[in-house]
Amino acid sequence: MTEKNINYFHQFILWFKNRWSTSPLFSIFIAFIVMVILQTIVLGFDYPSFGDWFTSWTNNWINILRNNASVAIVALGMTFVIMTGGIDLAVGATLVATGALTMTLLDIGANGFLNAIGITGWTAIFITIIVVILFGYLLGSLIGVTVTRGMVPPFIATLGAMMVFRSVTQHFMQGAAPRVPPEFLQIANFKIGNYMIMPIIYWILIAAVMYYISKRTIFGRQIIAVGSNERAARLSGINVKQVKYRVYALSGILVAIAAIIQVSRIGSMDFAGSGRGMEMDAIAAAVVGGTSMMGGRGFILGTVYGMLIIAVLNNLLNLFGVPPLLRDAFKGMIVIAAVLLQRKEKTA
Image 1 (cartoon, rainbow, N blue to C red):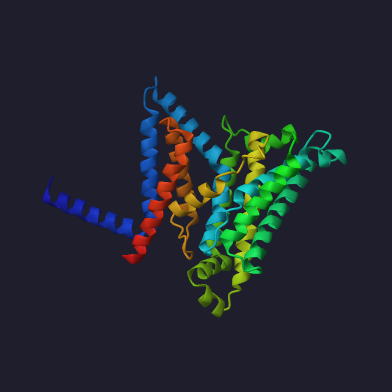
Image 2 (image 1 turned 90 degrees about the horizontal axis):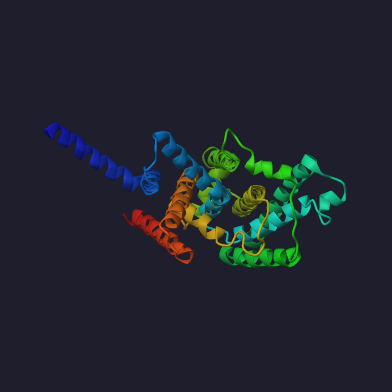
């Protein structure tokens, strides 16, 4: 290696080190690339042809993205909540509540609400989607009001909401076996080519909207201001309570959309187990993506990368045969490491 090449290499190392320490999105993207490479190596290359290998690789990624699309959408809302300095532990329970309403409205059996009044087909599906999204907004708004008007700390408010939403849903849905119409399943399972990628498309579109809100709107700037310094934001004329209320309401809307997608993808919902742990995955995706748990900093694109890292990690742990009960330990260590790196950045 010539002296000139050595200088170029040295400059690249310095540039890389500087970018790694100053740009959270850069470091998260590099971590994601490493996970992709590791995932590719683990899948192996023992295939008859490159085409067979590429097909298998593509199918694996589509399955990963489809299976994690719902929690990824929830994580986008969680990012805004955390950016204000709050937390939402009720997203999993909200998912179950909105999912239960979806299935109750669409049930093609004798107990189906819309079916009983003679509304069926795509008309029933359209009405259900609107009603469920409004219900998600209502549940998120209740949390927002509790936090802003009731002055209850977000951790306590959302912990209580989590217990209430899940308990009430399980009570009313015990013994129920609703069945959704076949048309509704096409929302998530419609094929483009040979692939069922609709949940992935919904995730990308919602992420694009959330990115625009965070970067190009007054509301996005207000979220950052409130999370950075609530007192300064209030003195500058920002309605802090209104901003906090809106992020919880928005989180409720996104959870409702995720519930619709999940019910459509699977065709059913386990009212006792669905959504359990979703709040942890959503928080993990946001934190790994560079969102500060102290508020004031967050990246929608970072959350997308963070969710991809968590999704690939789940898949790798499954491929390695790690017992299910131990998988959360790995995700927990990643979250702790991400928070420690954030603290290191602040003290540097």
